[in-house]
Image (cartoon, rainbow, N blue to C red; front, side, top):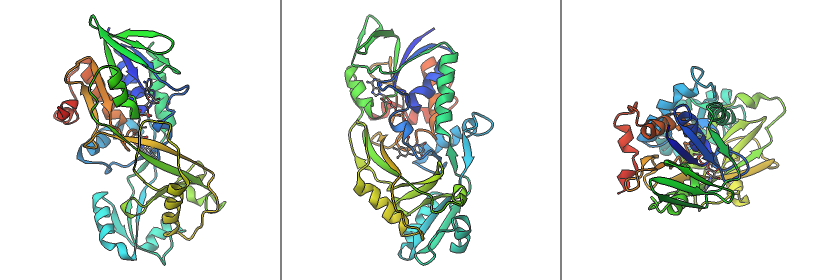
Length: 358
Ligand SMILES: Cc1cc2nc3c(=O)[nH]c(=O)nc-3n(C[C@H](O)[C@H](O)[C@H](O)COP(=O)(O)OP(=O)(O)OC[C@H]3O[C@@H](n4cnc5c(N)ncnc54)[C@H](O)[C@@H]3O)c2cc1C
């Protein structure tokens, strides 16, 4: 058995630890008191197969059957509507084709979301094949696997130092030192910081902040629960039903740094303003709000593989805005590489390797 230590208790760390725990002794360390505390509890929980660059889309597609009814059953139908105003014809056509939406009439769009404002909205594009992800269920699925396979999870356990000596990693938290053969870096926004602690050259990840406002449903009828996710053009906003209310994001990408991100009023107001332009509904109050970090590699593509200089240090990083929808395939690829198993992914493995930055 190999001793593997995974750093990070978000979807990346839990999914790879869950898979590895079937064949290896795994220890997972999470700095916070709760698993999934950072980006993994702040997402929009959407599965959009045509989202992200070509490589990300391959991961989305390769993850779908695992996430669907045949697998862990965390997807439920949502659908998606792109909405364009009078002066947005070309941007609308471009976005519809980029996200594989079919153009429909505004009156058909109003059959899907009755509060669409037909005075301001002139273009609508629809795609049925978009899903909500039950992110809690997915995190719990992997957590249960880790425990059932006899591996261990430590929360409140921030890695503060690491040293490689006599063929083993010595990983220190403020409570304990763990000794292992392989360290898996799934530390989200902190991946470069963790690399530095391990004496490894950082790869230049950039955390980008994105915010979300929860607002009351337009009325008490509950009709909104089946509305598709709605997108403004050029990332001006997106909105979807969530937990009996609506969530509205300004879709911003603000350059940030690893920290416990929070939303600011100006960003939230911008998203709500853009949402209100296309609906006949005015948001009276924000029920709650939050922000999270979407952490990207310089080429906005996942990084999965052993470090090219230190081969016992594994990167599972750069999940950006797709960490849940890519998680099934990304964790499968990662565990195959770590365990030295035959790859199910062919050339895709090379395209996400950290070697591309050297
Ligand atoms: C507003 C928003 C909307 C999004 N919408 C979607 C969506 O619709 N669909 C989708 O697929 N994705 C979405 N995402 C992206 C998704 O949430 C992320 O890609 C994913 O959660 C990243 O998971 P992670 O495990 O890499 O990071 P995290 O969840 O941040 O986990 C990393 C963990 O590592 C821990 N850690 C860091 N350093 C240390 C250390 N030294 N020692 C121990 N632990 C450490 C941290 O405490 C943290 O808990 C969205 C993100 C945001 C912010």
